Amino acid sequence: MTTKKLKRFSFDETITTSKFNFTKNLKWFIIPSIAIFVVGIILLCTLGFNFGLDFTGGSIMTVYANNEALVEDAEVYDIDDRDSYQAMQQKIESVLAEFDLSGSSYQSTTIDIADLGVYHGQAIVVKFQNAQQETSDILSTNSQIEARLVEEFGYSASPSAVANGGIVTPNASTEMVVNAFIAIIVALVLIAIYVGLRFGVTSAFTATLCLFHDILITSSLVLMMRLTVNFSFIAALVVVMCYSACNQIIMLSRLKEYQRSGRFEGEKNETIANAATKETLTSIIFSTLIALFCMLLIGIIGVSDMRAFAFPIVIGILSTFYSAVFLAPGLWSIAFKRKNKKLEPSSTQESKNSQEIAG
Image (tube, rainbow, N blue to C red; front, side, top):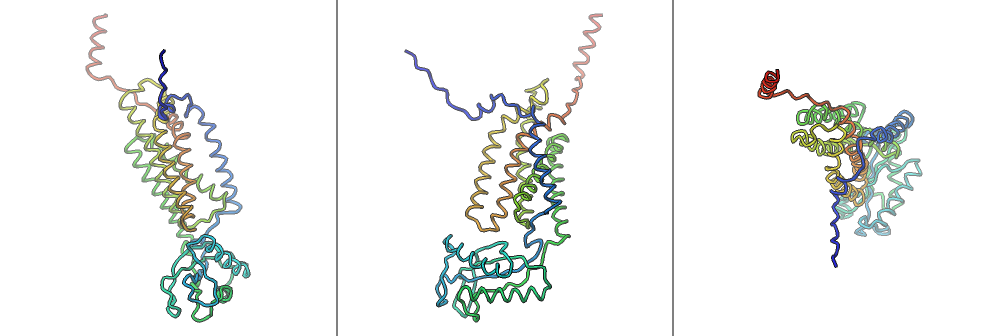
């Protein structure tokens, strides 16, 4: 009696031998992206981006947590404990609500209060946007907020355990926004030049389109989710561009390898691009999963500013995966034009000789 040997499962082989065609249905793959673009444009024209303090300006307050219990008759908070941190945050938010304000971001920090013997004590920094008022009125309002926080947390006015950081001027004015836009364009051009020099004009065209796609998709989804846009978002876009370029290079390297080896000589562009996508898909999947895992960890254990940086990158990573797998192969197969190979001198001479003999 013979026993049938079980075949070992291979993820690479399963993908390579699958009948799914990544280039045939390009027109259907483009539809979701176009839909997101349209919604993003509508939201941009109606609501606009939800700009943070980096773009709009605001104020800063630092509140001591009294974790060392140095202030008598005041509640003790431990910022390292999530429930305690949230309780302190809610109390600050309730004070801001009295002035029709809301905290834009909360971040743990340390504070020194020499008169209380506090050195590197736990504290929370709250940043909030100011109402549309004159500077003198904003300063007056901030003084009232400081007094209310001192009262709410049971601190004495002197020495104050609440530090009024004053007004933060919008350090990202129109000029800064333009400079950020120029920086992104310059990065796009440099990536396109590199890809063009290494893989050719067609590959540079394909990679540039995918980079634009990933930036627009990320920006549109940030608009749809009403996420806060600040300098960390600009930095996230640059990271997304670099990651998108890496995904494109993985597939373009395989395409260049095919062209040099002559493995697909005489085959259609669609066949070559589809085979390259299948053979590089495993690498793209696992690199995407690793990047997502790292960003999700930052979003879970990080502070609010780190989450504001990580979440757009998560969106961008998913977008780069989609463009590299479902859009780039089809775009390359449409745009790539093969060069006609010239006959070598020896081959030409042999052809002439054979024609003379036949004659």
